[in-house]
Length: 325
Image (cartoon, rainbow, N blue to C red; front, side):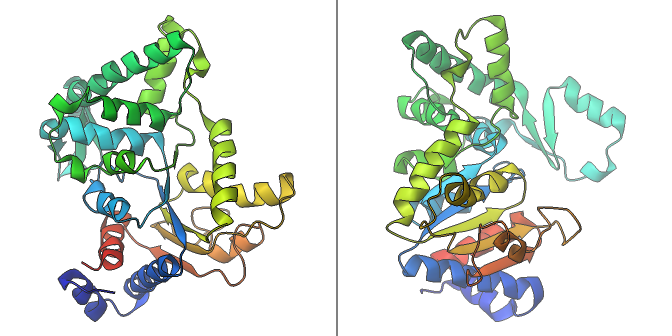
């Protein structure tokens, strides 16, 4: 593995506790790929608004990621940043905001995500307008696509190109589109675009609510992908945050085993979770990896790593180690 200055620094200084776990997880990731394995990365939280694309896009381009599971928010917020970056506002003193300060942001149509405000008109409505044209076109043609496929079609059409405000190479969704990477977006309905789509169905702009394919069909497609891919190579699971982005896809293995009786399909061959949810009672995001053995998701000998820290700090460093930067 090549070691650039970032990798050298991390390996020299990150020797104990969560820092050491970070290095171990990166080495495990690299070993898994070097052994011919594939990797699914799951994105929860607000990783796209944290501009994870700056590092994650390169991971995709260099073939370090073979599939992604993400929330609808992470899918759309990467595109928001692509087309409206210059209109974003950072609020470093967000901890000091009063309710009146928050109302003032709302009045200016600035939606806050911790220290970052997303502009409604330039980001959300701009994407909605372009997507609505795609939704209506598919609806009228009797065609159906997944949420990420509509985004891929939009990027390939060039309809938003005039609005790009960052280098597309820093957009992880754009990199995924170029690779035609498999993406699953569980719970897409719980996103800004999902809410807007519901609105257009209610208003009658979209006649067939099923024009956008969602959850159950995503699981069916994921089951096929996992079955076919795992027959050739071990599949790892790199989870950023908790929630549905990770909960949904990791369940595909016990579903295949227990509900379809495909007992010969291997479990996940590597597991790592970055989370600030500490080990706790009844919290899935705070469950230690060994608990997943009882659910048929991981094996006794599956390499398992957990890093209890801020993913916006940890993930780019792990990616740098994997990329040898």
